[in-house]
Image 1 (cartoon, rainbow, N blue to C red):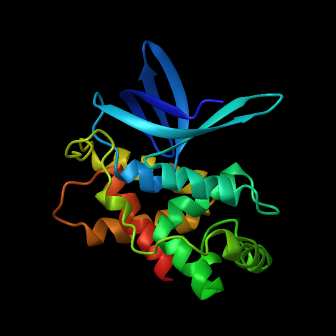
Image 2: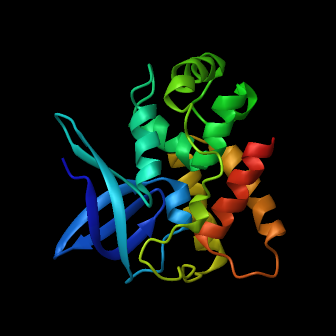
Length: 212
């Protein structure tokens, strides 16, 4: 089981990334919250990983903090929740937001996550309540650094390419193409005058989706 990787960030194409570890390239799917905290390409990063072994593939899921990986592992133990849906949940909600939603029994917050219907949300509230009962709501993942230094934003690219990549990322997380396109257009208006990056667009888009 591969539990931790340290290496150079070669590619970012949310939710996927490519990490060079001693000359070996590891393809990893990361939560959007982790993507928001990634440094620019060519920088060193440390990721906590969870490996899923299937007959047709060996999959790696990566997280900037061990705590986020721990929640991922709790989620995939819940009935009807696989790695893809767990990643979607952690992409839409920060750890502290998910914990607060479970503590408060906030079903409306959970059903806004793509792939989470009312029955799944109700089941999650029941199954996660005891497992997350002692978790600290004050933990702020934004305080953590991936490489011990200040994280720099990803370099901007032409706006059309940035929006296309952001749209593909939302679709990969389970959002409908029409919804993804609509919310990204609004995100661009919100960020008007600022240098657009995939991460900045997705951050605004996901907050907008959660607020609906």
